[in-house]
Image 1: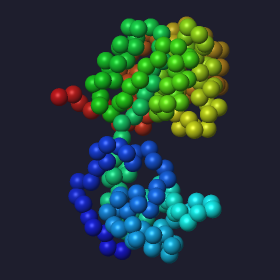
Image 2: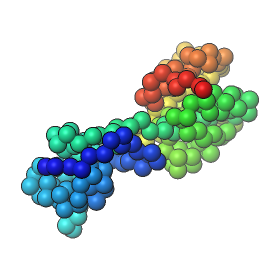
Image 3: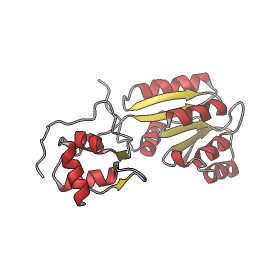
Length: 212
């Protein structure tokens, strides 16, 4: 197959960053070929995928599209470019919230939302779909372990990482938090550099981008 190449291809608005299933039209746009080319490759078995039950619509999983692109020497930058990571900070201390916002605003790879209660955290988790939740253990309405457990019970949030931050828990409570599904525990007061490194690790980011 011959594809029309484009150099410096980037996903500038991040619209493909989180998408897992693609239509033939979307696959054609990403590969820079005609939709009919994608359909022919799908129907011949060169491009893996499935048909929507009860219809003729074709759908292509992300892994299959990436394999197809690599097999045909099509640049995969548009799918593999580093996207902004969404982080939800849940903390009832206004000063700590401001600290997080200041820290994260320096790295444009983060998109930040904040909440001060477990209730608001639940609503934002559903709508914002964060990659990472930074969660205070002692919230005004409920404890952080309950918020963590609710996140883990939602299969649509299976990839969301949870980092608990607190200064008032003992070893037994830390073990309970990890058992509830927390990925990491950070004790207050925390070292800012160590905290940001842990957040980057959990979100799959590399070293921070240097400020101008």
